[in-house]
Length: 268
Image (cartoon, rainbow, N blue to C red; front, side, top):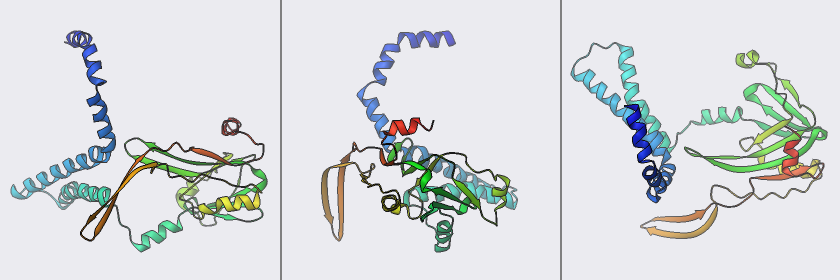
């Protein structure tokens, strides 16, 4: 049977390759990439939920002998996927208390004459980077498209020595279990860090380097056309854009006037 399949594949290889490279197949791949949330998340979760509801209906109508834990499991199988679908479509809402707790656990950067201090509450420690140790700073801003689009923005600091880590007196048990600090001389400060937008001003002040960054949004791209539609009291604007050719990385500061590749080569 296996030899028959191999023989058939050999005979129809050319036709298969033509079909695969056909324009319809390319359009299909584009459609899948565009609707990846629907295909890879919403549809599978809907199927799981439907199966859960069928099991729940059978359990009730046929009067299955199910204990409390069993009812909880069946109900969760039916309703939890619906909750996830709602979150994917409309977004997950959090309370003010949860929002405050998230902000408290957020990394924060502070500046003084000694250097940059990164407060890291999640890991119960601070990271001190002296101004003298900073050899280069590269700003990055790019997107990665896979199952869904991810946006990355931040600064990478290239140092000539390992930064100083200071642990808090009160440590979470998991941080006590893994007490070792990073030995990397490359420090990443992403855009989720509090006071992230202050970095260009601080670099100009303490490193005497003029910062000129092109802060283009790589997700939006270049505007091709814009159309505004009026429907009763609602105004909708439809914009068509194409990907921009902006630089994914830009040098903010470098002691030795190197290129990006030369900076990275020195830290491999």
